Amino acid sequence: MKQHYQTLELPLNASPRRIKEQYRSLAKRYHPDRVTDPAEKLRFAEKFREINQAYEALSEIVRRGGLDPIERKLDFLYEQGHTLARQRQWARAVIIFNEIMAIDPAYRDTHARLREARRKNRQLSALYAQANNLYKDQQWAEAVDKFKDILREDPTYKDALKKYKKARRERLMEDFINQH
Image 1 (tube, rainbow, N blue to C red):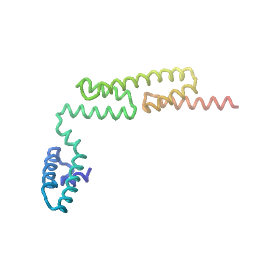
Image 2: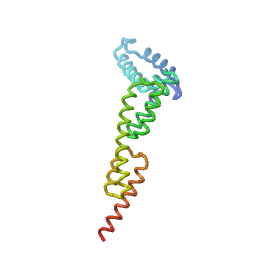
Image 3: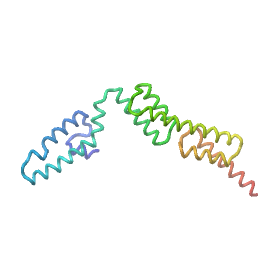
Image 4: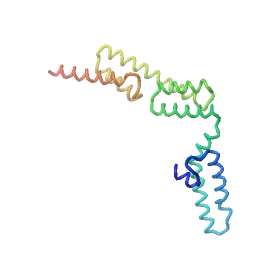
């Protein structure tokens, strides 16, 4: 990022408006059509390309700078929900997407993402109920497998890790006792 600011001859704390103004100024100054000498034209074309790449990299900052506070909040929540979904933290993603829906039900593809997160969360909930029943019935081998499936899907789901470890420990003890 630092390099992009340097290319645009800006300090790191430049405002989105300042980034846009500086980009336009430099793009105008270094546009290849402003010179006729072929050597200069090549140098300007290279500089113009660098300026465009730097602005492209900083364009998200400029875009967000033009948003009103509610849009910024929605944008932040959407990114947070999207990150949670990528990390397979479905229960938390449902909470975030529900918050977005409460503010603006038509925001981006939030409704589709919420449906997906709810579906995944319901599946995990059902799997957790099965695993928990096996755990209570002390069917350690089956409980370990179910909790392992849950942890593969969402490593932070409820107390699945704690119960997985205990079930695994109990299964190992059971196996040891059965061998001796």
